[in-house]
Image (cartoon, rainbow, N blue to C red; front, side, top):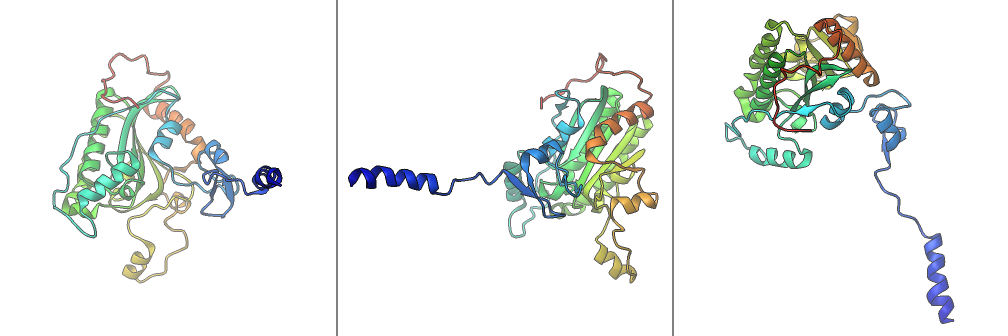
Length: 299
């Protein structure tokens, strides 16, 4: 019986037992609750194939989706004072920064890169909602200014993807001062006669909306993106009025003249390429230009 008990039975148990399935093969749509195969979601650029819901994207994903393949280079952004107020709530602000840097592998809530979009050169800033909810502090303000200076230096259009929960409370008044600072950065691009395009993604709120996010020559948003300054409940309590359903969504803002277009994610690269060509009067690719400034860190 030893052969039956020690060899045959374990083999049968292995055949009939539960097979381990990796837990990262499927994800659930937050809008329609459908289960989606991760490979399918990668193919659709994180857009639900069932209901069209645009899921939040990471910085590296947006870089790959926006630029031509292998064409972009990230730049090193200026350093800003860390924890200028010595802020602490449940954690020290410095500990929160360290935790988020380790989790996201980003230095701050903004990444700036330059490269080509359908053959046309552009400087692109992408806000990282995954880093402290994309809140705007001194470092982000420095990053927007650096992006504007690079665009002027390279005579290239500036494109910024916004995704933010607003001002960074841990920096107090310093955070609020980034609103005029980033506005001045946009004015630098304008005075140089260069296009400035904003792509608003879900969510774009608070001080970002009240500053550089609403100053684009062309205002674009992804479908159903939440865009606003304060939350609906706060506004209703302030004005003592019941506001229409979805009044802070991209489609409502498009209907009421706050946006120029709502573009599905899969069409964004081609749309941006056409806009660069139209606004910058670029009738040919510019990657052959010899006067592009060098940058310090490859993607």
